[in-house]
Length: 200
Ligand code: ADP
Ligand code: MG
Image 1: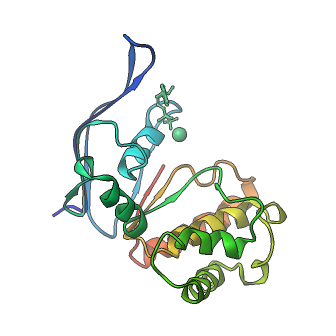
Image 2: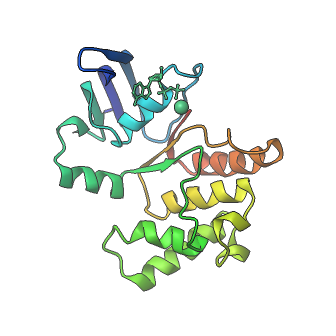
């Protein structure tokens, strides 16, 4: 069975009481575990809309989204929280790091949602940060890092939760050209290890 299956997905954004914008029209797609899928489309074509739906960040849609056999449209709040914790890592263009926290705390904070004790969280955070080449920066704040490093922290934060799949929404578009490659290298490394990934 496909890891992800989308059937007749439609997304409408309400504009006024009587008007709505049809952002996604009858989207069909499916892919398997371990695949690296790219989504390409012009600005405004609905890429972020699709990613937000697949990641469960937006649950207003018509149609069917099956992830690992589960219909996420039918999730209750508790199931959606578990889905976010256990299944999907999300990486955004704008990093979304907490500015006043060290990068180590940014990664451990994400894990406080899970039931892992604080010592294990810290050890796990250090492990993934080291894996992504950030060993020398644990105590820095996000604004003391380059764009490429910030995005690697965001990837570490997602990875620390051991997600089944990772969604990237234009992960390199806010980066200076010379930093794009370091983020792409990390992504290729993850893909080679068999991580299921979808990237706008
Ligand atoms: P992309 O990521 O491909 O650039 P988006 O998914 O962000 O595109 O947006 C798709 C379309 O939906 C755009 O035309 C955008 O204006 C519209 N849209 C996005 N968010 C909203 C919203 N909250 N309300 C109304 N329209 C929206
Ligand atoms: Mg977008």
